[in-house]
Length: 111
Length: 114
Image (cartoon, rainbow over all chains, first blue to last red):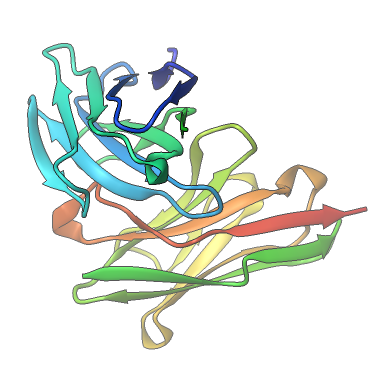
């Protein structure tokens, strides 16, 4: 079992650009959550997808959007990038009501 | 609404000494509580969780935590620190009806000295 995988590992973008991050959940998991971890801070919940729908959302602007595919993999899209979007983006997968397993993250740098 | 406060952003302990990491929570409903560990350039790994069963929770790698409702605390302890325990530790809370929506503290960096 490969666990939760994320791609790419690192990404550099410039302000105003758009970015897409990808997550493949652990085998057997149907729920994917996304978190943003700024340097020196704890992760902050962005949103959660289950059955291809956004089920819960944190306090993030509409520039942050996502998608879940029939195979349970997920994408996080961020539009109109700001310098403050520079962070480690973590994906976590689970079955409903069970432990979340985290991926290694995607390090996004916005210049 | 839930929130978590971790007391001490950095903790230094000697190898073999007690590790104590403090976490206090605020929650409008009986919470679920978690401790995660993050090693450099890696994701988060669950150490242990409290979900309204036994108040003393044992986790992996010799860690345990005690839920104290009267003190709104969920402190993490390990009797004897190992060099491999050097990492960042996060306390997190969620509401039972919001499973998967974790509210994390700011983290505590643990340094273990020989």
